[in-house]
Image 1 (cartoon, rainbow, N blue to C red):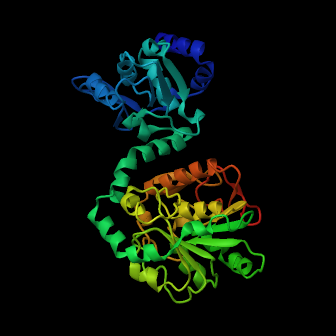
Image 2: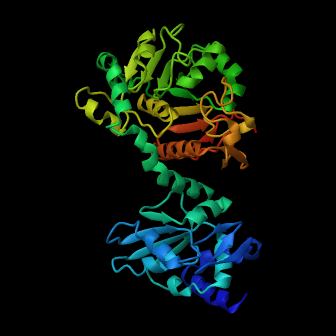
Image 3: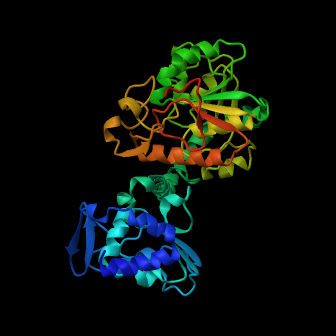
Length: 431
């Protein structure tokens, strides 16, 4: 324990003893760091530079400039070499700077090497490990290097930061002035005007148990049992997403409701034959030919997407929650219909068992397994491959569940991503 570390740690022990206790347990010297020289210098971990090696202060000023003008309270995720913290503390309007540690061992190493007690001593600073909170705090800046170097304990917060950073980019596809969106809405306008408002389904199954069925790989193991349950007169209400319809149908399972939101869904996914008596709930923009061929009842609603802003002023319909995936409106429909319990099938948000979906070839419904470069923790606490958009969908579902404490949510497989807020259904879940 050198003098630099002692000075840094003395401040932390006095102000945040619980943080100091965790830092004592970090293996700082196991971090594969090396000094990188340029016009300035920095540390690199596994080839990833914590900061610029040419002008650290200019980079920190650019990063700090992303905060709103006259910001009174701000959150910085990651610690790096302390440059952003120092620049932020130079803002006269700043009253509180929350610094969230994303990699404890890395921060412990920096405390061994560099004086950090200047910014740590500032009374406006609040220091904590990022994993002490379940949700990210706004406004924030996440240091880019530590978004990659975040330790496993901070992975859930890291995933939320990545998802939040990508929101604006992801939403560009759904802008209100996108010509393709306008064309899709116009080709389905006649059906939108004629079809039943999804609100007519709300409150129609108060206290009911509802199964919401997605297409993840774990659905496969439940198909025989679902087939048996579906024949029961006292069965739960069955709501499936569009891509799960064919795997269920091939097993002889007829859902009560199918939910579809993606304009790329076609008759290949939702064939009209055999759809009599099955309600199709959809969002405008779907292929009108496919919708018109559907033989069962059709109900339509909106999401909060800006692409519906103009048309909803002329054609009133209720809304369903959409957070990027069709699983969201399917779950929201179950809740708005009055479900007491919602049991999830195939809601994996990952590729367990080296497969992407049930009932479809690898890559048939999106990217192939071999491009998966990310991970989430499964129901056993093990890492399982996934992709960035799946992680975002998982985050939005967890947020939705947290907002509906009156409904009990169950999951049926430990193979896919662990979904915070759900319980494992003992009748369906293997150990």
